[in-house]
Length: 243
Image 1 (cartoon, rainbow, N blue to C red):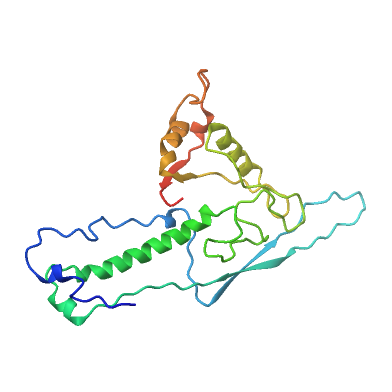
Image 2: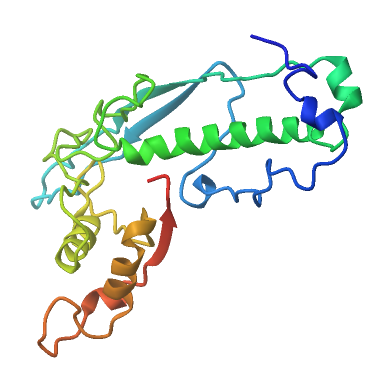
């Protein structure tokens, strides 16, 4: 990698510049922590385990035997740490002779690049929710070996597969379907989980549609004077240009 010298930044070593547009933007607020769980690695590989509890109670005939059951043994999922980095080199002469305080902003630019990289990688979890690998090729599957959003998630007890994926555009009907999927989701023993939707994360382009769907008292997709039930879901609208 080349070293930045006064020859490249000669303008910065002489007086007379009125303005320099560099790293003038307002620092970007962290987004991914609003909707993703964050944990820190204490070792090279992090391992999670998942198991299932006891099954459903069984009727006992008069004088009959009690049915005995057992927990479903845990399975594991490993997470491997990755490391990314970037740097720059400048001459001592450029650092000392630059007149406008721009060299001090080089570190700010590096920090911004780091923040952007973290945001992009974190949002890869959502942007590639239906894929089994991230953009960099690393595996992104869950305990069942499937993508985060799948139409065939398996249960530890071998019960019916479940779907948490909707291959459809944002609409009133699809929001209703999504809520129903949440309500119908079962745990690894087939019991209702009783999940509740809390937020709707979408790209900024869809924000007007989301507001119309979630805040209209009447249905926005029909001329009939019908109540908009989606309005009662209580969802927070979260927008991002990274999804």
